[in-house]
Length: 317
Length: 240
Ligand SMILES: Nc1ncnc2c1ncn2[C@@H]1O[C@H](COP(=O)(O)OP(=O)(O)O)[C@@H](O)[C@H]1O
Ligand SMILES: [Mg+2]
Image (cartoon, each protein chain N blue to C red):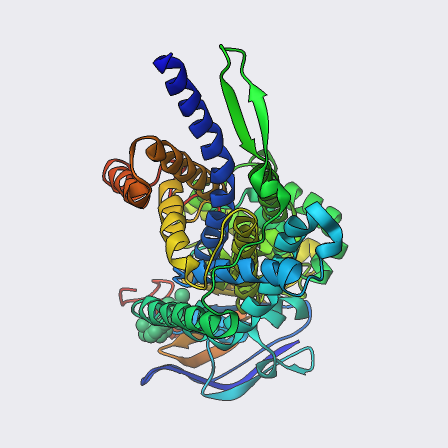
């Protein structure tokens, strides 16, 4: 009997890890895109995720623009959070980030990393505290009836059952579609090739007629939008405050480093791995130690495989 | 087609080009030779717009180039094949060529240009799916030239295409460049340290030393000049 409970718990952790992991994977992909193409470590990524969550909240619950969509509303809102944050990030790059990155700092002593650290950390603080002023500190949630219901799957071993939270499963599917779409965009289109060329060799890309500054702006806005969609998806099953970015930035960095910095698909699998680690640690550890478990795995991998679990560090963006 | 007048460039306080003037006419093959550090690459980078000049002017097909951002110049018809090849290492051979065809002119005739590129460099067709970073130096140089051709340029600028290549490979590259000029009628501006081979190809040559043009003229004039013979061709009583 004990063995069966153990099996059931393990199976459920596995499935929950995969489902949550795909959403983590999506947010990691956004961070990795920005790093892979711009070589900028964006410390404000968690707060862009927070903006995505609030965008989804206001679209569905706050102003209720999308309430008419019923059960699909929260997910449509999460996807719409993408273009909204894309526009915001476009302006942020134009006014702030481009001042300390790209061709402007290429060839300078530290390649602008010091300036980038200060600007993105400052941006994180502005977004957190700006969020506090605008959105208030009351925890918000985009509750749907789906958040509290599950599909039950009988595995066929005794009465072992897997619980699939409906909201999370749909969010996971949306995340997979967005990642595949982004991968196709980068791999197959002219714009994607131009972004990769600008990442590979900015000077040569300029000789080809690519406006590298603009390519970076697109990469920054796209990476922010992807993470914001993940934020919108998180909002469909978790309550959040303007400081939610702090929790998720840990997950994102762990995932991206696990996957190998700069590799998009690696970052996705890194995120999935973090999902697994988190859900399995929940079996044995109290909730407040779950992030610690992520860190322990993170450190182990840095020690054992510094190039990341998947792919090489010089992998294709 | 290209007119450079009184161009001066400095890096910080260091003068790299002083009062350089040079002209390239439609259909011509122009060569600039000079020793290491003379400012040849700086000249190209200024024409391509990634190094700002202190003074002077650059006109291309009647247009003031200095008024246009660097990323416009490929679209105006200037293809820059940079020193050290600078291929996109993480992209495949074919993707590199496709990147070359980024400007409108390159896209319009892409299929025909690709055929021409494969005729000139068959190895690039065989290696089309390989990552450019895994090619040999000679192959990367061929790819860099192919990428330049793919833009459908009006002017092809080549910065030391023979650098670091075995003599046989360098000869092959020079042959192809000459072929491109003869058969496609493409206007070419070549910068080289291999003076004998480079001057042999050109209609007109310039000698650049420490940022100044010290001599210019048609092939015969340069080859008969004592200074060129002594310092660059190793003919005469002094060592090169
Ligand atoms: N980015 C740079 N910063 C400072 N000095 C430079 C830079 N690039 C070139 N130089 C200097 O400018 C001069 C000309 O260099 P370059 O144009 O590369 O010469 P060449 O191509 O003829 O060998 C050299 O003295 C070189 O040291
Ligand atoms: Mg040079």
